[in-house]
Image (cartoon, rainbow, N blue to C red; front, side, top):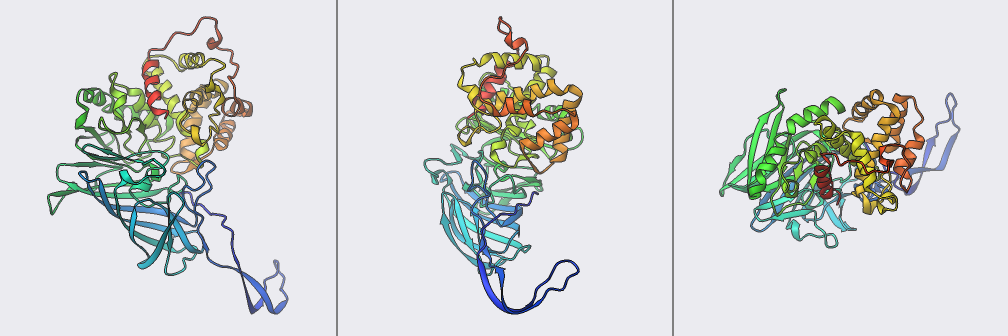
Length: 510
């Protein structure tokens, strides 16, 4: 876990005392009687972590280690009730602190004592403990709440998708606000226990592994229990609730695989299975390029026809919208979302402006898979992608290294992001390039990273100055000039994999 120390402005309190001030090393300070001394009073934790795109996401003053999310959900009414227990450590003296959350709160307790609450901003729950919190103190924060997530809006938006038979808590960059209180930024990762009581016959899929089978409860209900023991960013925790066929297996190494398919998929079901059932094969191939798989389980969820329109790299188990299967099986999106298990999940962005470290890498993984499958080399895909966007296209005006908050998922972040990595590969050579990728995932495993850190690593391994390359491809508007087949008079041939990659990116870039 990456601990975050906030720079909240401190109020000063003056006290008088007979104090012996400490001098420099080896010096005795002069005695002062009645001289005012300055002490720092406990302060409110910052209402955000200062992200350059989303400054009010996350909160300052504490570091979360674990979430225990215990819920009851009724698909017929969309009523969600819950108790979330948060284990955290204070990183400063706090008079109060914030959680990111939207539902109605019944009560909050901090270390057993009832706390008072209020709301602020679009999604801030302000908690004032009965006793001042001191730096380094262990905190147990218990929040009881209830609400109808699909009717709980920020503006006109909800990150909770209600379906005919249940719901999906799946979204990026925010989704936790609608189902559990949190420190909602990738800088503060934690482990999770998630248990959900639903009517018997309804399935619940979440992250990680099932430490025990579903438990029967009174009132014809069943409780589903999931656990992830790897550090997880809050937006990567998820729930899929509804009617699902669940398929379990193990990898050759014994790691559990859990795949789930909405029963509403109908004719789309076989294509979904033909894609997602190759997850273990794809993860094994990606492990040979990116380094050891970082998590405790694998799998995927094919969501319902009235669910999400995109896919998301929810940790250990990506969730896919039905659109990916409308033209048959599509392993490109499975490659993309599982590449994110390294690039985005294990190594998360330190700031959302570094989104290229997620999407550019996952997109280039698709090009490498195409090369592996004999459906078009990475060079052929670079050439065709480059030629697909005319020089005067708005596409070239978006900077993948800093696209802006309203263009975090722009096509340029995906396609020009992948082109950037191919240019890096050409510049440093295959030996260095395929050393850089696993070195990055190893050095920042379970942590966070920035574009500058990745560039520094690439320069260290390659021994080259790469500033011009990164500046040109990530931070300069306009179509870069390249001397490749992409500049031939005749347009390059379309690689066989292009249609499926394009279809996946059409749905992913949203």
